[in-house]
Length: 348
Image (cartoon, rainbow, N blue to C red; front, side):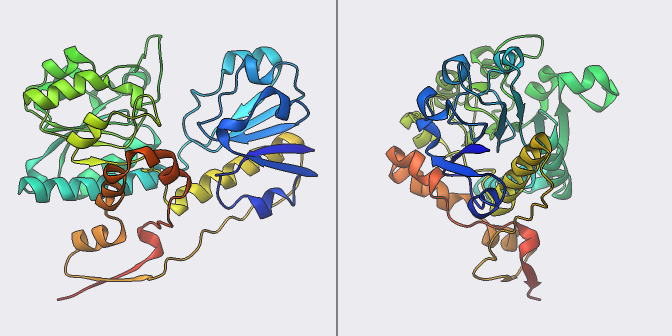
């Protein structure tokens, strides 16, 4: 079995080489029809677009993307071509929740308010949004939930419409997949009409997909005060991001909200488990991320400890200083562990 693997997928080399006969590692944007034509499987990230142009005429039968999203896979073509694909739903949900936890604490510091003064609208309540809901609730933030696909299937009373979130929330955070059309379209869900309808000059947070927000409309909303602040981790036209939006954002990071070592290890493990299932390989996959340099955190409060574990301002300052290094920052992201990797000691 020959497998082509994105060379930025972490913790995979030793494990995949025990599974496949031949493994080739390539940058995600260097997968082309020539070099994948005799591969049996691909393990990719979002930078590789799996469509007819790439796959036609190849012997590829299986694709695993080590990501939650799969809009970079032409699922219709794969179905027609008999190619099985899998993603890694929920793999980095705790990592994104960690990012939101820190971002919300920093926003409260900046605005000199208590979390209890906030009302957050969570747009998209899947694996990630559900964990963000738990974080917000633990901080005492009032939470409103918007998820039309879930609302249509479940108890509608658990969810509210976008108009209510527009009217009542002073923080709105997006955790939707990218759907370019259809009943549950999310492409430019936050467009000019959305921003001009806002009632409370909220903070806008996006860690889902850049195209969920119309960049030009958000810039205008920031300039005119319809939006008070922005926390942006995902961008339209990555890696050629808007320098204007980066400069105006309170926090602007290079698509790394889900990049904790724990989330990366989960994605790698899930991808390899799917590969083994598809090819009928009996192999236990055990991926353990490295331990942090300092595993004991001493702080005067839980909030201080959370920011000592991860402060997104560090990533934001690096990107603002060198936006041209967007892909470098993503591809060479330093070790970041989640809370469970640490022992927290609170000083009296």
